[in-house]
Amino acid sequence: MTACVLGSCESILEIEPVSEITMVNYWKSESDVKGYLNGLYSDFRDMTSTTLYGEDRGDAMIAGVIGGVSRSHQHELNEEYGLDWRTFYENIHHCNMIIKYASGMNFAIENDKNRILAQAYAFRAKDYLTLTQMWGDVPIVLNPTESYDKESRPMRSAASEVMKQILSDVQTAIELFPETNILDKNRLSRPAALCLKAEALAWKYTVQKSNDKNDLTNAISALEEVEKCGVSMMDKYAEIFDVTHRKNSEIIFSIYVKKDEYNNMYMSTLSMSAAAGMLTNDIQNKEDIPYSNSTIARHVYSPSSHLISLFSNKDNRAASAYIWAINSMGSIVFTSQNKFRGTVYTDDRYYDNDIVVYRLGEVKLLKAELLCYLGGENVQKAIDSMSFTRNRAGIGAYKGSTEQKIVQKEILDERGRELCFELKRWPDLMRAHYAGTIDIYNYVPNLVGKTTPLYFPILRKMIDLNPNLKQTDGY
Image (cartoon, rainbow, N blue to C red; front, side, top):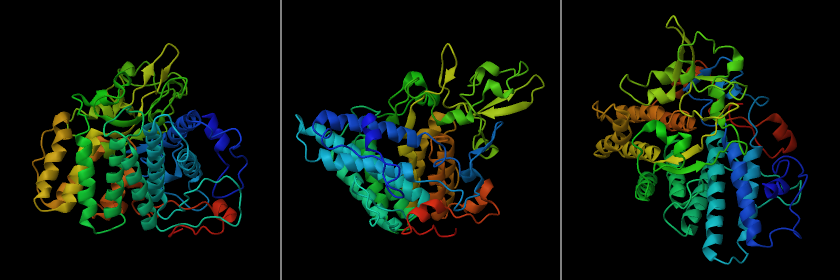
């Protein structure tokens, strides 16, 4: 972590760096590289533990008791009220440092070096995928910013060029990983990189409209390799996320969270605090609700009626997605998430669940989505792939129409049920919109009647500091 702090800059895209790695003292041994990699994971966790990029703009949340929702959630964005991409580029800077300096170093075991480089390339690909999903065209920076040159301010590259870089990086990572299995589920691995490859190709085919069926077949092949890497579906849905079942059989990659080291992951913002005054003695099921006694929980958001409507009475995942606080009159006082319940310690509840990035249930459903896009006999194969999560949920195999667009919509709904609050919803909705499954402007409640662009704007202050940056279309 110290290494990352020392190597970070105020912003590698906008203003002059305030510090840089001292070459005399660092990058001298493989322990330096390993320590820097640990810092990279810490920074990635800080960047990932937010609903801003995966959930805020979607359909699964409404304002909670405390409120204070983001402008992203309200779809009220402009060049004064957008999001800053600085943290992504700081993370990319650290990836670039490892790629530059570790490549030329001698390691006692060459595979250790290759594994570290593979993780750096995979992280960089993941950063750029999130950037292009949120902003579209973004600058490509492949070298660390170790000195300031105001004449070398980057421009935005076309999203298609960003995707080429993503796929190049992820393929390099896949080839560098020495093993095909997962050594530690809190670390990136070849199977996690294959998930990332499939995710990128799905975006390329749908949102970027490559119209290349090879993107679909290559993504499906990557997912089928993941299916064979030793992971398996958990029998009980709720246990996937429970703190007592960390790194379980279904997990491919999750981000490590531990009390006192990193206390609260992002789902605290959908959980109730007793300090809000809503947890009175009249709440009949108070002890079933994952609340905190202090302001650790904030209930900025509540699970939406739109999300709740996706679940049938038979679906056992509903009890994990949300829980109603019921008073003595049988009325609903508020709704809380119930998926990431954290741990009750002597002083309070802390939301210390690992942050799930990739798991087998998602692999099955992304494979279903991609098969469905292929059409023909693959639509039935898509239905079969969707059955893994549906059968576990107790709702059984899909028996509806096999018309392609209808099945596409059913897969989107199934992903909404299975993956709710796992930071997947906005990218899912974007793919569905560009694939013609939905009209996102009629589907997402907070977008109805609005013309807000689907990509984030660049903040005016960023353009003022770097005139080479062009504002996102529509702002």
